[in-house]
Image (cartoon, rainbow, N blue to C red; front, top):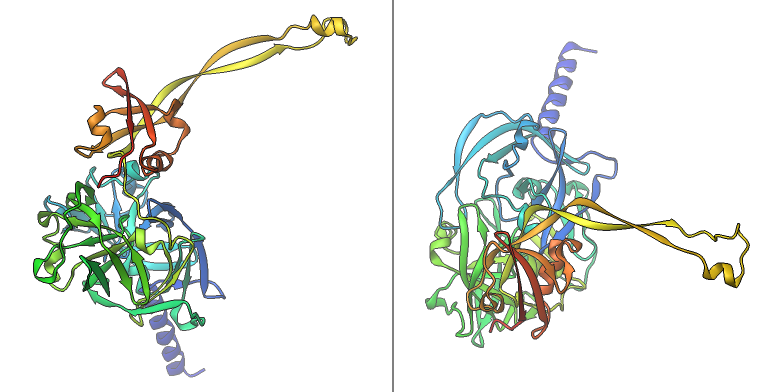
Length: 448
């Protein structure tokens, strides 16, 4: 073969190799892959592999950079080297957060792989989602994955499907709605409408799969975007720059093209918590997990499209926490459990069974104790004026029993779900407060 031809072929191969390394691609013959996820508090928790280490990440369409939370010093095992110090800013009233930018990391999600991914490691112990979600969360990823692949999120069956765009074919769907996306700082926005005080108002919302609420709106009297008189003040979440507080209430309805969701939950964050978010002047708020989970969603960033198909969650009620308690994992407790063993239950007459022999049988129980470590759940936020607050519970209380059953028999999400139950349900808690055991009872109450 001519040397010039060999050189041209080599350069072509090298260019294609470099190109493939600069984006996510599906490394199988089908050019598509299906990955199961956990849906926890309306958030998508995915398995992600970084430099050969398996971790769990949030799929967060509201972030433009993949971030690792280094509260467990996991970057030591990831072979991440300090290359550049930067400062990140997000929601919350706090300051910017220091992060280390690392280049050329290998990241793998199912059969999707990228060989030169930039990662931002944040060294802040406060940025730890694990206690509030009940599972370890080591990072968040959004734009870098979504921009390269077609990402289908099946909320009803809890899996995502990743596909190379060149091989993806849309299926006919009469019950779907397809909306155009707009991008600002690599984040997706969609135009929709809300009805407040019987008035339809057009709004531009960030699509934020990393938020567990339904809607956040930024109050603007000139547009008619404002809270109703029926609201309560509450903790809304923890952003990159600190805690976020604001008002919670309802909107009359929320519209995504032909879809209508009535009496949807809405939060109006304090202006001091969203100063950074309002840098994009056209933004009116966020559309988050409690609405997204009601659809199966196709993200197509290359065509700037999002496709929505209603699923089995569409008609779920929009409920609020009726207790006022926000819980989180608080390490483990050493628990003593009784273990009963049957030592002797055999007949005493040499195996001859008759009524007299049976009546003379003796069963000897040997009671022993075993110690084990069980998860502990503590109150980390308590809404003022809520039933739990009025009953006398306090932030820092560790829940030992709920309705006469040990708390460690439940997952964190199971206990939280009890607090969203019907108004009037009685909740009995036994708690540990700095070594003192106390009991409290209250009834769940509609926060309005």
